[in-house]
Every structure is written in structure tokens, then in C-alpha cells.
Image 1 (cartoon, rainbow, N blue to C red):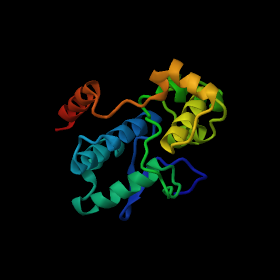
Image 2: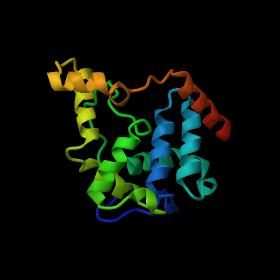
Image 3: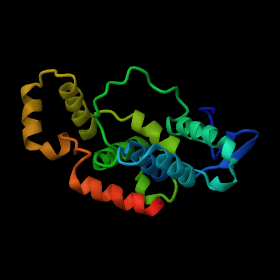
Image 4: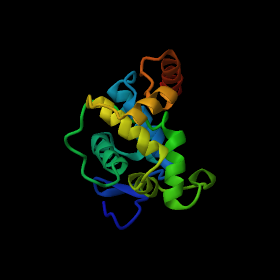
Length: 187
């Protein structure tokens, strides 16, 4: 995939398949893919159904390739990062209220008001987030995940803003109910 264009389709075999490119679709898929309650085959089916406009026309023998193209697309066409630590330091859904204002500042507009903002445009703005509430919270989470000592002002921020700093556990009853509702939609 070329970084110089915004893809509207993905190559699978010898054909291009149109995709849904709005950032909201990609964020939804990232939430589904991170859902530990869904089986891999359930995640794969949801990904195909949601991302590809005409997913049913993808031959069964090409669906694995279609999923690989989907993963490349969701990664912004960039090589998958190596050396990831096992610690989770952000959550697209939980952090959305901090991410969106920062992305909006980078883009100079409110993407929520737009009918369509391409995922790669959104992701590019996300990667350019500078100093913001989100970057401060992320820095604290990274320090905590690596066992580093927090500065006094960071400790105070954590005490006063537990709901922002602490990531919800994935086994939280409210999270489980949300997952079950999603599973019902696609089973």
C-alpha cells in the first residue's frame, strides 16, 4: 500500500475489494480484535463483514489473505511495530475522550462532525499528538508498566484522576456485558 494515497480498496488475489474507510469502522474493528472473549474465527468473520463492503464475494480460499490485507490497512500501511511490551497502556474506547480532542487539534477540525474521515488520516493525526492530556496519561501508564518511579506531580495526578489513568480491566462486568451484546449481533 502506498503511503501517498488513501486506499478505498484492498487487493486480494487478482481483484480489488472496496472497504469502509471511515475511522469509526477501524476503531470498532480494533475493539473487536482486542476482545479476549471472542474466538479468533469470530473476530475474523466480524473483520471481513465490517471492513469489506462486498465481503461475501471474497472466495473462501482468499479470506486469510483478505484478513492479512485488513491488518496491514489497520496498521496504516506501516510495518508492524516490533518489541512491543506485553503491558497494555491504552484503550481506544476508554481513551477516546482524550484522543479525539488531541486528534482534532492536530487536524484543525472536529472529525466527529464529519460524515467521513479516512482511517489513515485519523491515524496520522493520532501519531502526531503532541503535549496533551492523553500524552500525559500515556506517559504515566508507560512508567507504571515499566515499574519506573513517578514524579511527585505524576503521583498527585494519579491520585486525583484514577479514572483517567487506570485502564479498566477486561473482566469488568460492564465490559463483559458489552462483549456479550456484540457477540449477539454477529452470531
